[in-house]
Length: 137
Image 1: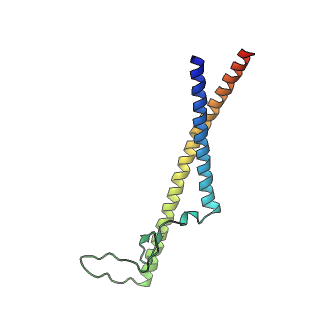
Image 2: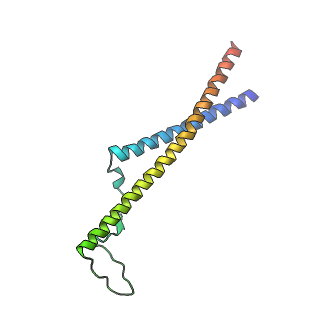
């Protein structure tokens, strides 16, 4: 009975670590493809910057300015608009880069932990199986 519980543990742990490794590898491949091959994949539903430097998700006709103390907003000059838009786009690019780095760290960490544990448990399972086959032979 003790041997059966041990086998169940090793097989279950090996399966769990294998699944974790596969998920991490798939996610790393996904991140790599989005970064280097399909570079527009992240832009489908991403935020954009309007002329006034405000972020939005869906297209809109005119930039909306916040009203201060009931005053009508003063129109922005072309230089101010281009400066705000450039700052906004830099901020969005920096945010996207930070998100990719966060994802990369997460998936590499998962792979770094699950990979060796999978290999260790897999070797133990093979060793147990060989021992069992020798005992039954």
